[in-house]
Length: 166
Image (cartoon, rainbow, N blue to C red; front, top):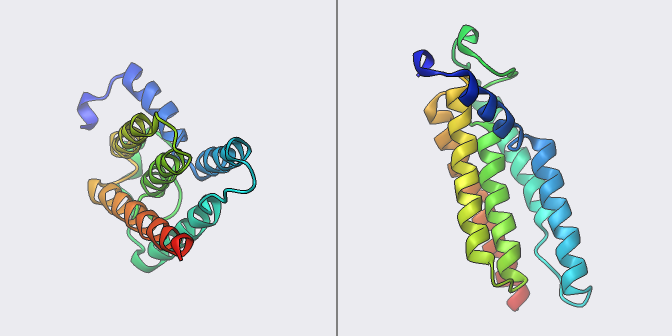
């Protein structure tokens, strides 16, 4: 992969990978939650997306501390990175954002929710792929990040949907 990198693709993926950062994902989820609350009105409570996201970030950080896996060789990096690599934080964040944003669109009964889900899935895949391309993660880091992000947010959403029905 290192030998096939091009300047144009590298620039595009450097920009894309920023969208999977913790600040970017927190802003997107919080902004969507606020916007949908205004759209829905206060009488229809929404999913607690921000707390779900924050707990997911905590779970990822605990996983990083437990695994202590080193990143690929720094000489291959095309983007700055710190800390351990497993699971990928950007991939976890992107997967959580995809589930939370598409779920919020579905909960708000927006007719475009399937498109939001499709775009969210493509976004999560692209962010994860960018991390491998940029040389800061192993493919297994990205797969673990997706699994953690999807597993946690789907479980949390299911729990809160069941609580709402009681």
